[in-house]
Image 1: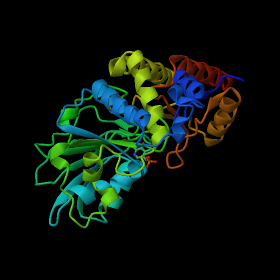
Image 2: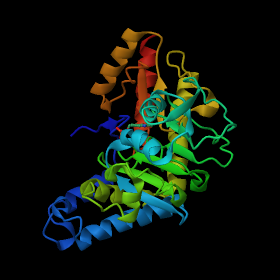
Image 3: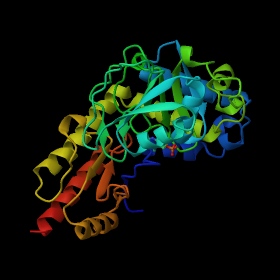
Image 4: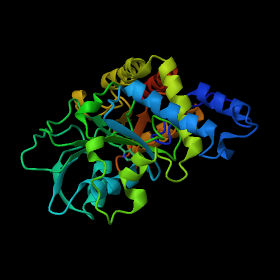
Amino acid sequence: MKEVYNFSAGPGVLPQPVLKKVQKELLNYKNTGMSVMELSHRSLPFQNIIKETEELFRELLSIPDDYHVLFMQGGASLQFSMIPLNLLGPGEAADYIVTGSWSKKAVKEAGKIGEIRTILGNHTSIPSYTSQNEARYIHITSNNTIEGTRYAEWPDAGGVPLVADMSSHILSEKIDVSRFGLIYAGAQKNLGPSGVTVAIIHKDLIGKAPTSCPTMLNYETYAKHGSLFNTPPTFSIYVMKLVLEWVKENGGVDGMEDRNKKKAALLYDFIDNSTLFHNGVEAEYRSLMNIPFSTNNDDLNQCFLKEAETEGLQFLKGHRSVGGMRASLYNAMPYEGVKALVHFMKNFESKQK
Ligand SMILES: *Cc1c(COP(=O)(O)O)cnc(C)c1O
């Protein structure tokens, strides 16, 4: 099989050693004679899996004890609804900082439930924000997957709970969890396969939903039952555990951050010195995970994408709302993958002269 590098924005690349372990254990998980997929979520082996997943996650992110870790389904997109359903009482308003397509979607859903005030940013930087008028919470998209921007520093929340969609960069660099009321992420970018959505939520934000809130949309249900009120996405959680073990073996979040900075620098440095490719994001707001770039000519972009694919550089097409190209350099993307991309870009550029 030819070597392929997967630059997809999501579901994204998974570490090879993790996939090999999944393969090895697939038919017989720890001498149960069964696959993880066939294990009851009430069985001891699965209870151990979910417990160890939570413990590892807490350890890697130094999550303080007064936070719950919840495993849910429905993706980050369901969180867009769950957050206001749980947190926004009658007469209360929330502030949403809009920095891209995903923030817009979060606003759209929250607006169906309560009063939302928006602070509008652009696609090449992050607006500054200081909380002024009583907001119930402040919502941010901490890394903008489509636009390739990320926060250089967290907004000044002034004691108001900060809620962050970290889907596309959780575990990619150190964060101080105590700055947040709620952090959430769909797993399929940096944590594991699709199917599981993780939230880190301060205990003070649990149990605030109105009694009319459906059981499965209430954070309290997950917190009370250790995310085992109903059947959780067992296989996804199992793979997430293996991904977390891989992160730990590779230097933890510090190790990831180090490697991610080197990977991103390699690509940004090349783009900034290129006469063909450009990236319009202001330097301090550049994402380490999602790097959009383009030539000035759409036919040339198409040609680039086609040739890249035959070279095994996959899923480099930019989001349809932005066009051009985008390289997603999630934790599991090896440095060699970025080197191969830059090498290809160099050759492509020299052929245009
Ligand atoms: C991918 C993504 C989403 C959507 O996630 P789903 O799990 O597909 O609902 C939301 N927010 C951000 C920042 C994303 O990158």
